[in-house]
Image 1 (tube, rainbow, N blue to C red):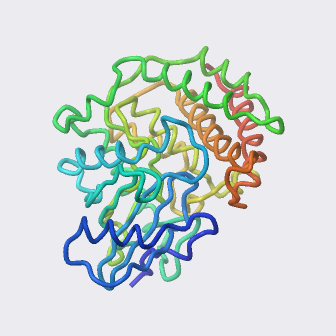
Image 2: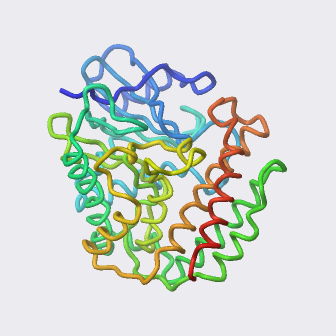
Length: 354
């Protein structure tokens, strides 16, 4: 059997108060005994995810990052509510077990959910996980299908339609992400002004209003360890909302790095989309359009938007590192990554027919 995804040692400075966790868990889940073993999942650069074990009973705790964060960001209780509403109609959402809004416990809002024991594909295939080119393609299509399925969910039936602000999603995203970039800019990173101006000048009308994930990637998908083509979970619903499905796809493709992409882009790869059998970005768009029924004459705007949005996310994290609000050494090179993404956006703009 392929190795099931496991948490590892907790990063320095991101430890939890184990006694506080224990008290909360035993109150929320009657029957727990013993002391918790707490470890941390290595992936992710935003919210922090921990595995909390009591013998054979295993749970996942999600909390915001330490340090100063944007007021509207990392709303853990919102994420939990979205998951609870979506679970009845989109079975890949993990069950929420408990939420906490008492800052006396861990100094922040957090929630506990079931742990889905499966395979998560991060930068490379895990040990023991080997697929032929044909099977890799089959897996790839299965994962994309789950994004299509999400975009088919009846938002009104879940009550999630209240998350949306109606028409103008594209416009709000360009304005919002531009504002976030300017507020998190550091002197060693380009200003992205030309990119932001192009996006503002080329905004299309919303193509639809659907439930979107906003961070749909392989490393947020859990696979059945006995059947890698079966998705058993989709994780990280922090940014889920009602919005344009093609903007959601553009977000996903910002992480979709191919085998022949240039070296600086390869340095950003965090999922195995370079493997033989994986679709190219162009093929993903074509497959998604065919399955979803949505159509546009050009995907350029959405691709460039996705890269810009990724750059803003990276820059917001780098801002915290730059100002000493986090000591996580992974973030030291994020300024270079943001600079590369600006150049990539500028090149795609120059090549676009829009």
